[in-house]
Length: 208
Ligand SMILES: Cc1cc2nc3c(=O)[nH]c(=O)nc-3n(C[C@H](O)[C@H](O)[C@H](O)COP(=O)(O)O)c2cc1C
Image (cartoon, rainbow, N blue to C red; front, side, top):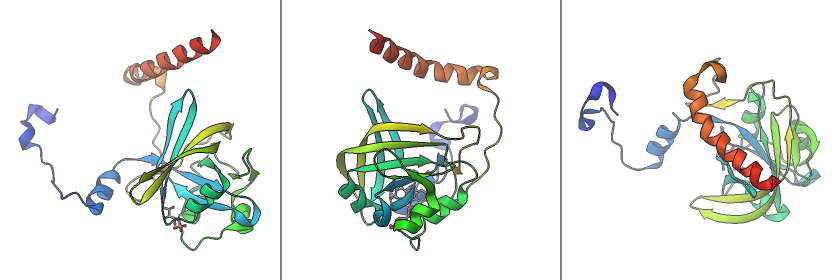
């Protein structure tokens, strides 16, 4: 609903032609977490900062990352058949900037910058990340100038989850403001209830 019951037509939209700038501009107002997606071992290590990632399915466990066709990571995931999604913490802005830079190193130097050794599929881990999700490549879908890599989740690692997440919003990395705790916010509890109910149904099905 538009504010103050105003007629929809009076809502002050700035209508733009559907072009890359307009979509980028709209999406800049959509805050996301930040990940570094990695693949390959030793000299073959590649890593890339990515926020176009989705936890797709819980049964089976499927995870999706969208990688530009020209990105160095793209052929590496195809060759290795696996990737790891490192969920960055709020003290890892430097890592995000490094792995978004076209001048960054690959190979052993990239492995050293990530600093966490290898995950179960052989893709590098980022030390200090909130979590790392190891995937085996299941499908590749064409998505315009990007490819969508769908992975079967084979291992989930939780890191120091006392830290907050790194956030990307309006082209920068703002600090997350403290929010009311879930139990103090009725609206939030209502919104997660549906999700919890679905998770519980899934657990019940597994127990049977
Ligand atoms: C916060 C953030 C999120 C990004 N998300 C993606 C993404 O999801 N997919 C993608 O292909 N590039 C993404 N990029 C851009 C790549 O990190 C960047 O273009 C990188 O240099 C591409 O790799 P290349 O140097 O091998 O071409 C993102 C960059 C930033 C800063």
